[in-house]
Image (cartoon, rainbow, N blue to C red; front, side, top):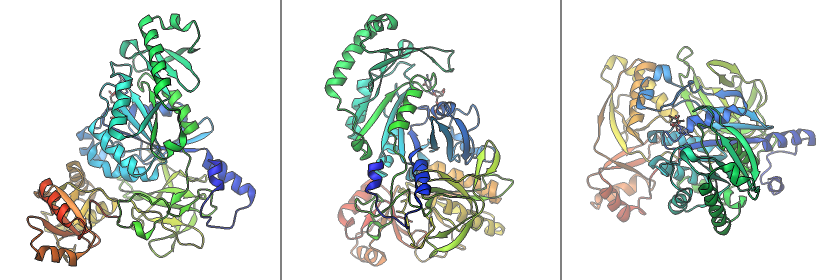
Length: 573
Ligand code: GDP
């Protein structure tokens, strides 16, 4: 990594005094920032809690997962007033372990909130894919994997629940390789599963870690660590079949699995794989140690290039980047949240720091507003339910919550110091698949209706579409969401936070495409009779969006008009 710094790209500033720079370098080098992606119930909450056991929690920006919270059931989302900040709003969990500063960015498990996950992954440096050992890859694992791949994040895989009957570890590797076209490099290998789960082989140093079962749900004890070729191993395992199996497995692994190649991991071509059990703690610490050692610290980050404005949001290879050890501060907003604390009626913007350091009261510039100055006097984080102000400096990889009372900050906005105005690459929105007219049944509450909807749209809770040329005031907007739960959240929050009940009228469309070629091209296609049975609307930025009633209509239009209309599944803010 240090070698990488020597090739460092853009420096925003004159080099800082060596001592300052070394301090910053150290802080950057010890940061590990990760987001866990998994299908609901794979054990994300459990793993996060166990990871926390190893370090003292420093603080959580956003709210805390309620103790004992196990489920991300629909009911969680519906009791939003009490439970906000549990399933959908916790943002980042910070702790120190072995000299490293770990930031765990929370991602919602439910697929309807994939878009939130995507934005969070934009702020993460590493993704950890959690797989249920009995179930293998599940629909949400697949969807989120694609999201992580778009962000080009190094991916670590933890196969969980080995204390239960599980699929063969080879079968799981095979699934991942086949479906995701990524090479698996198992670093921890399980010895047995279910009641016969005895421990794991650490392939990096050839040691076998044998565990004893604690009380169910409690931390398992590590009984013994033996070298793979230690003659006592067979006796210690006390299971000759497992012992023979381990021998066979090792032979196959050593013969077939290429060695760990971090350059390939960084390019998303290889994933280090770990097997264990979050609940009983088998393998969790070995995973954490390994992750802290080989996981990626904050890296230079790509700036926006005009040419990628309408692309798929992935980052061009030759994009200009900013080095995290630049003395000038920079960061971008990846998440907004209103009314986190119902008593305060506040709005927070979460900023991922990309370079330099941040201290309270700092003056920064707002890139989208032509470098307008802001004083960031109220960075906050939460520990439990008590809000505490961040007094210490924060560094690249950290997330700070900034008060955003008048909505000056929007998702994707860049903040910076220094003379050069910079803007980080944009975060695309997901292609919506659920569409509904959002009706305000109480005309006397139109003010609350407009305000609430505007804030929720700014948060990215849902997208808002209008008829072409229509003004938002007085309109019945069409809300577009990735999944129906997003609409339920809007309805529930409109009522509880803005005192305005809304009703939805679902529209019979299934897909949306942005026509980046513009309105004229749309009119031409229409005049040529090529846009039948679709609905043409405009998004928040006045850009044309086409809604399709079926996959078939979408496919026909894509093959006929995909190029001339420059159809895109999403557009950048
Ligand atoms: P999330 O939805 O991904 O956050 O999953 P949770 O952490 O809430 O776990 C879902 C269920 O799986 C809970 O009942 C957990 O106790 C259970 N669980 C999590 N990890 C393990 C594990 O390693 N072994 C077993 N047997 N159960 C686990």
